[in-house]
Image (cartoon, chains in turn blue, yellow):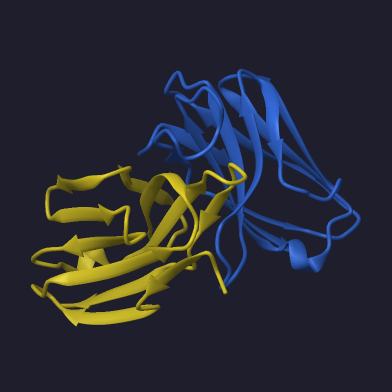
Length: 116
Length: 109
């Protein structure tokens, strides 16, 4: 148990659906992250939030929309996804002033998303 | 060619063997991480290194900044060590995080 929870753990959605992934951290951290892990590809950093402000967006398509209402919660809103968006989506948090791996990150268990 | 290369890609060993996983990178970095990902998908951060060597239980991580190389060692390996081990660095050049493709380790009982 890392102190970072994600729901749901599994999600199957059609291309016209709208769904949201939720992440919550109980560690008092300042920064939160969304990662995408596709089969046989390296982890990809999608978004970084520091003190609720987005500090990184790594050219992620607009069909992925993050929301960080406070330092403990992070959402990823999904709409009109494509089958190639099927992947494991991981959330992480850290006590970090700028985002990234300069500080140790704690990962959630991930949401396995399948787009049909 | 990836800026972070791991070797081997896959490794199967018997319980008790000494395991070494290598990571080479081609960019200047501020830190290097070793991560462990279990079959269910959850990731655990094992080590964060900027120089020298760190040890935690049966795990040892080393980094040679001049050679741009890091190794992760597992002593007295156990089936529960079976996982994907991922090397990741943060580049000084553009402040981006770069992940290796991972090494899939399988320890046989």
